[in-house]
Image (cartoon, rainbow, N blue to C red):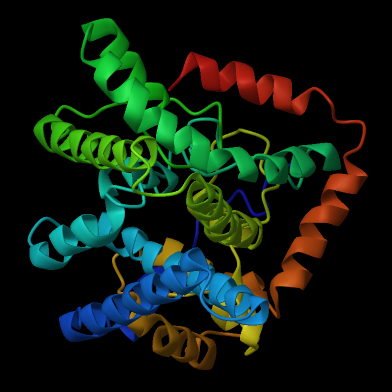
Length: 363
């Protein structure tokens, strides 16, 4: 089935929501810098403890988990960066790329596809790089989604160490690379359309920086400066950190749309706010990710204002407001809802074939 409520939203209600939160769109740069530096800095320290094998096994295990959680948190600032206009905190954007995006093969331009996720004509369709109809497809599709996690770090290495230099050998190959393998998303059938103002020079700079970083690391391993055992431990840590985001993404939407264009209200009702105050919510939904439905209403709202915005809306909106339908108490409730929908769709085997075909056609 498609998402509920195909009708357009009540414009007064939407305008009223904007009025309620109008003063919450100012960035607090100091908080961004402090949060990211503490998250990434402590994450790197714990990663070093884990990678060097310092201390007892229990200490290394705790360091592994702590490093993965903190590096995951530091990485989610890419989501904030992609929504900033070009004039907002350029120093932070540069610092994030230099200290995190390039070393962990997550340069911010690889997430420009996220803007299609907020495009009213693309959201919930095969032209949305972050949407799969998992709630309307057989449960096997959710299992396939999760089974991708172990190969994701290898694909990132392949993209920057091998594909980057090859892509500059032929214009046609370069276009294919930019459309098909230059986006970080969950929809493998997505093909990104490049806008006329795509910053190709910045793309080249970020890509070649990742290539140089990987080439340097490869040299250190080949010459014996770094033991090969470290490579396996790094891969395991990156798989864990990426896996946290991959699992978290299952609770961002209901994922019930089957590919048709959705109304604005339908997009809202397909989105989820995780409202329970638990340790798992804090760890798995950092930097405002728990308020995903709110984020789809106001993509430019900084993460530090989202808690207050949600409280205001819940206090002032009428009891039958669509926004209230987005609330979910915790991660498990959201995933359970998705899983039950998938179990009911056991015979809907043609859906993903149609999704793949529409994705291959592009927009």
